[in-house]
Image (tube, rainbow, N blue to C red; front, side, top):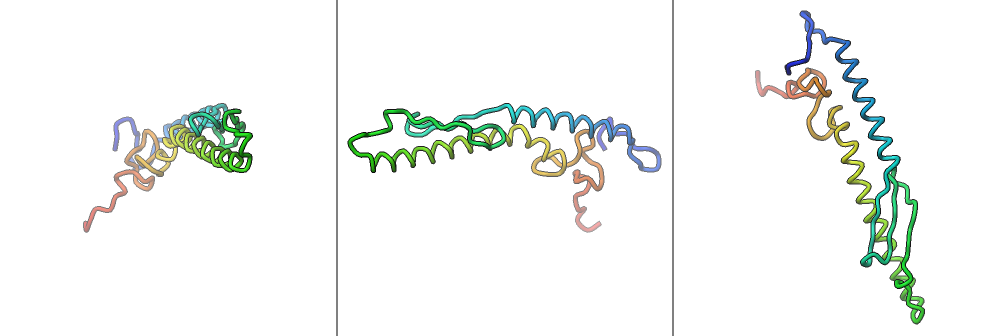
Amino acid sequence: MSEGTNVEPGGQLDMQQLLAAAQQMQSQLVSAQQELADAEVEGSAGGGLVTAVVNGQGELVDVTIAAEAIDPEDPVETAQTVADLVLAAVRDAYNAVGDLQQEKMGPFAAGIGGAGEAGLPGFPGLPGLGGPDDEPSGGQ
């Protein structure tokens, strides 16, 4: 059991400490969600001929196509090329927003037994909460 985790004599957790940790985690989660809502990331293709902007919630909010991407001599080929560049720019932006979402929200998934270190923050080895003490002991 880590230092700072209070367990009552009967093996009960200090409920005030558990509630405080949950409230802190909820506050951090709300803050991370707000940061994502306010964020915008850009993806590009064709050396910047096409750019796409996606907000932190994964919504496409802008696409810009440079005039140089359009060849008036060959509109059919240009249309296909521009379509390909738009797709590539949007994919690039979605990859960037996925990275941002993982950066902001990943620690919360880890804190509740998702990827990464399991267990509640401040309670890393509590039985029943996915901490290391829950590992099978291999034949004991």
